[in-house]
Image (cartoon, rainbow, N blue to C red; front, side, top):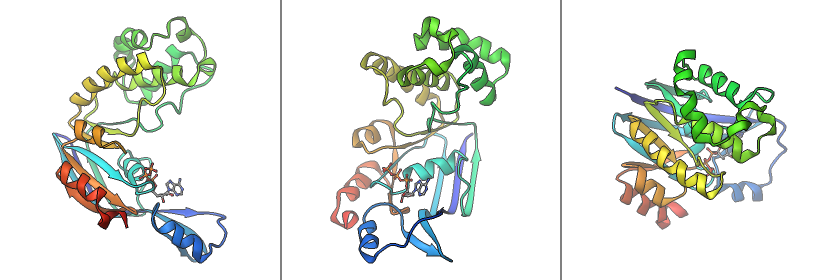
Length: 250
Ligand SMILES: Nc1ncnc2c1ncn2[C@@H]1O[C@H](COP(=O)(O)OP(=O)(O)OP(=O)(O)O)[C@@H](O)[C@H]1O
């Protein structure tokens, strides 16, 4: 069984070296992003503000909200990339996230070597990686490039490699932002089928997206954020409607 329990989570980003802001700038910041305040001289952006969340097997949560509402910050907190300033995050289950998936490759190592390096980092044994190696290599269609250092890869080629490794894993909790943005049209089409399979295997999924269609297709519950705070949560169509309402937009 997988489980996510987030209690009263607040996350502050201290902004070192930010200058003073005029009243006009403060007003302009009101509608977008988290709240900006000052804490003993340091500017602080509130990325998340008192979030409570509980997810169990079968939950597919769509995170929605304006630019800077806190969607990516919440994903990063769930992925363990950020530690909350306040509150607690309790996760049971193996987490795989698509955040920054092309980062962290060893530039001088080959594609094949990077499959091993990343596999080990993600907790697989050498034997487990060997079992998956052929299938990963085939899916990337990178052929002889897999014997070359990844520093010579284009961004689309790196994405293919990262995507193929990630989707070969078994995740219990899957955290996703916009994942297959790069890549040519044919690869995206092929990747979609693999992504669907990968998502179906996850017990819990959290997706941040600006697309109502993505939320409708992949999620069964939604959380609407505004300036880092929950504004509405529950049934998808109801939450999407609130997202469009004057109440939320002002
Ligand atoms: N590294 C950072 N340093 C400082 N502030 C940050 C950082 N990352 C995000 N923020 C701030 O936190 C708030 C929430 O940002 P976040 O990226 O989580 O929003 P989002 O809902 O994912 O937005 P978008 O839809 O534009 O991707 C914003 O006010 C943003 O300026």
